[in-house]
Amino acid sequence: MARLALVLLVLLATPAAHAEAVAEHASLRLRYGLSLRDGRQADVGPGLTYEGFTPNDLAAVGTGWWGTSWLGAWAGVQREAFDLREEALRITGGSLLRASVGPRARLFLGPVRAELGAGYGFSQLPHFSDSSEPVLLRGVRHAAVVGGLVRLPLVLGLRLEARGELPVALSVRDASGARAEAKGFSVGGALLVPLRRAERWTGTLVLDFQHVQDTVTLEDGTQSRQRLRRMGAALELAWHDAARPAPRVPAPVVVVPGSVRVRVLDARTGAPLPGARVVLGGVEHVASAEGEVEVASLSPGPVAARVTAEGYAASEATATVEEGARSELEVRATPLPPATGALRVTVVDARTGAPLPDIRVSVGAVQARTDLTGQAVVEDLAPGPVAISVAASGFRSADEAAVVVAGQESSLSVPLAAERKGTRATLSGQVRSARGGKPLVATLLISKARVRARTDAKGAFNVQVRGGTYRITISARGHRAQTKVITLREGERTILNVDLFPRGKR
Image (cartoon, rainbow, N blue to C red; front, top):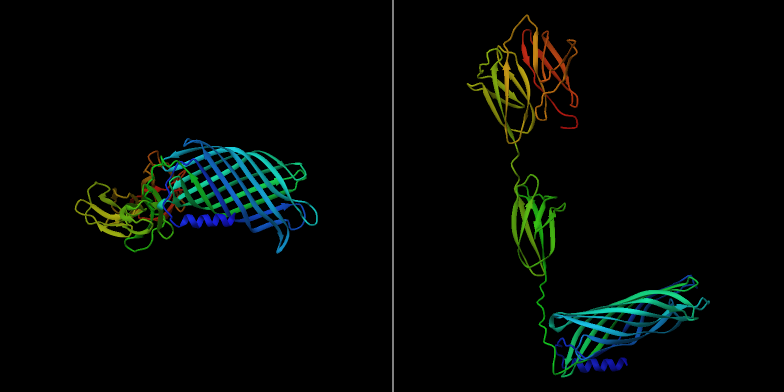
């Protein structure tokens, strides 16, 4: 039979032509090939594993349809060789038989053909005796089977087939007639190559693959498992109505998708930007540690990439996706200028309120002098708290603190008191929260002067001490305490405003 099938394949291949999709009345498929078997039987005898390539006997599947209608029937039979070996030594062998029959329905969905069937299935499953020289036994499985088949067209008249079969409502007997349990399934696929189209029949070469898996459990607990992968060539002959051939189905245009790899770099340094967000094809992706994002399965044509990263201006670039290829796209993001704020310091006479011009003002590390209106404006300051120091001849120096807000100009008024001698120094001011500037009820402790004072509801305080240098600790509930060192002169009135930071905040 194998030689006959080979001769038929040669004869059909000589005047090869593209076959059309036809609603045939009947078809017959003959197959021959090889089996790769991987099986084992647990708990019985030594070395009961069986694997390797063995030849298949001829398999045949036939399908018939009533007219060109959707309803028909199918029958299939398959006989396969079987060897049990221990390394290179053949212990026993034989053959196994599978058959199935039943009704089948088909449906054409444009160029796609689908078939669904149900019926009866008969299978011989291998297991072995527990003697010192195992002997092949054949368990028999009777089952209702359901199965399906889908065919879809490819280019150049080729077609692709996928199929599967599942036995249900199993009834299994071992060689002695005892009941057993079994489960399994069968799936497969094939590439159909048109060979010849005559007036009433067509010939097709089928490059076939099948995967079968079975497990048998006997009443004594012995279990036999086998897995087969069958590969081979088949010849399919189909008879159809020559007067009404099915229309030719044009081969679909196959578009091979492409891919794009996006690299995100710092426009100033050329360094990669890991964690940058790239929106490509409407989907957001996050750049890797190398600043790269690769997106596959894109339709050929132009595609835009939008890149955003913290501290960088949003950037856009366009790439062209080529069919079946990977395109490269480099996006350079421009760093945003640092966010800064400004501080306007107004220096006035504490007694008269008149502005004091040409007064030296220190804002952090920046030095400035007041203008004729007593104001000094310092720009490009980093956001956050900053120390202010004001000193002028004939006046007591003052130290303040302010909070710089990004994108805004903050204001601070610093009154300077004239120097006095022979009287106590006066220290006054306000305690506020660095978060929002809310007044705080706080405690001032000047250990050297043995002074402990408490602010009022508006956060204001006023204490008098002798001239000298003092360490002052300011504390309030829920805020971090601050310690300041200040030098007071006799008769000097010093204003000390303090901003305390909430606990857990920086």
